Length: 497
Figure 1 (cartoon, rainbow, N blue to C red):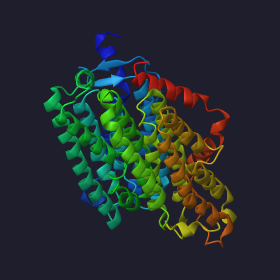
Figure 2: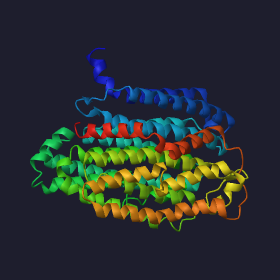
Figure 3: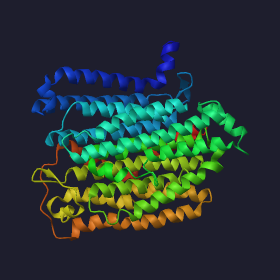
Figure 4: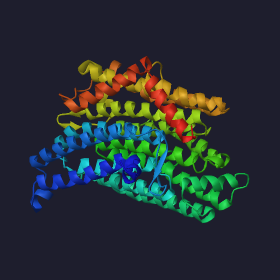
């Protein structure tokens, strides 16, 4: 292939995605309605254009997934060592691409029905996905920040995509302001680390940090704290969660579904890589940050969601709780723990997508509804939808033999194996509390007096996604080996295995 081709091979999925996104942007511009009035006023022509671009974007994501899966598992660095391709990055990228594709499928019918279907939506999702993939392959603090900002800038716009909605505009503004704050904290941490270490590359930092492991420079530790705080915002871990409930509630539902899966998977993978690779020798310093955010997230997710009446706000606090459980696996800082984190995030994506597919079905008289009480009696009017949501609620509660039980099992086992018995006990206790509001939804659907029925049909895209993700959640225990094996290989790659 030649030296130039070999050097670009690890970055081929990202190069393909960014080129495809720019090509679809131009196609959307030239195929769509023209003129000032067409740009300002929504029309069915916008919907036709958006539908074609959206399906093309889904095809692009599928092709990118094949390109990722075809990558060699050996660790390869390119672009002067700033970009790394390995099994860990490949695993995380597949999760990101699957989450993006599933949520984009769910968005097509919704966007048309709510008269917000514009081709820019799918293009922004592609740009955000490219940023996420760059993040998880970052091998330098500067590359990390570039990927993070490409993702964030796209997400700010997507959050406020429904321009005629005050809630959506408010969600985008809050996300932007708080996101800028977290980016500032991250950059300040990077500058401190560079000032005291003299390098921003992960291998260079690892060597310097290893020399100072016994007595690290105070400025280096402060920089690490600020970097961890900035990344904790991106994963919506307490106490950096303040944006999550308002943004989840205010954003259009498909956007909320996207926020809850792909960016969360990318940010979690990035947090794991940053803590393990450049700052692994400083585990005695950062493990305190991780366990504190883990405990706070589990507690907040368990108790703050109890009194919620809006299903999207409930899912926001649920996501905070779930990231707390995932971080339990990072606290030991070993290969078993990282494997548990990867398994947790993979299963969480499918559970969450299925739940949001049901939320997209909550439509009455042509209007979207979001109150939890509106699910009352759903089992009588739409038994299959109710069964799918019940599977997700039981799984999120951690009830065996559903997939959610295994996701928690592996992170708790990693904590126990490393001697963090108290952390596993806290995780189990908060899971019991959280089970209250998950099982309350099941009780509403099956035992309460029925509320007026939801509109039908559900839409082909939503129906297919709901069926596939709920079946995965239900039947994961039948053949878990592929996911467990892939997570083990990815975790080993991070530790040089």
